Image: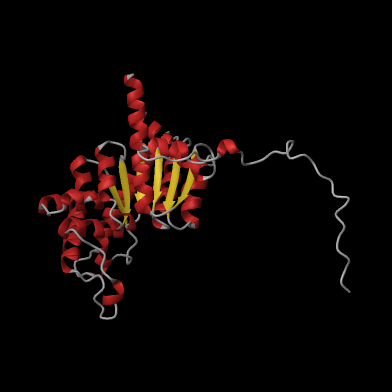
Length: 321
């Protein structure tokens, strides 16, 4: 049988004036106008969700930089492939980004940019013929650099940066590895053997890859040991760098380093489990703050950089006044 419709006459109500509300007109966005500065744009954002969190992250990074604290970026290769090297190199030159961690694919795309000014082959076009990843120069330059790095007992990132500079490749100015080496900024490379095209080349040496990458992991741990009051940004790495960061954090805490009050943030165009857990949430359980932003790198990272420069310029102008 179909029941009778429920009678709502006895429903208890209350005044909307007495109710707590999560959204008020005070949180609304402000109208935009032509010629706005980035700082003005951020001030016009609604005070909700990312509109509240993004300006806070910008201020936290600016404060860390002002206090001489590290700002470390761990990133996937996609960040390089969408053309963001100039933005990151500029922030390195300004002393804002103090260190970078890459996965193995990062050195491939960065080195190809340095060598020929282009990268990222169309996999579907060459996979059927077994030609994917078979570019001779890429394998020779990078595997040679890694083997030499093992002989010199240095890290993988430093070794590749050295070789790029020595070879005087035409696009070294656009290379994170080359410019970081020139500026003595550490770039650590964290490799999963078998994931990168250079591992299929005849010059690949598993012992050298493991030695130089492990050397870089130890350097990365030293960087994380000084992260109290600093910032760690994970940009476009869904698995490898979040895992590396979490292991480094537990190592340094185990060894007695005080790393509790830190700021972390994850930027990616899809929300993944590991960055949210290993970068945003777990590391800040005992202090600091974690942020998670979803959006295209080619939009979000230039916006972050511009907002940061505006914040720092505003502070400088205020100090001068």
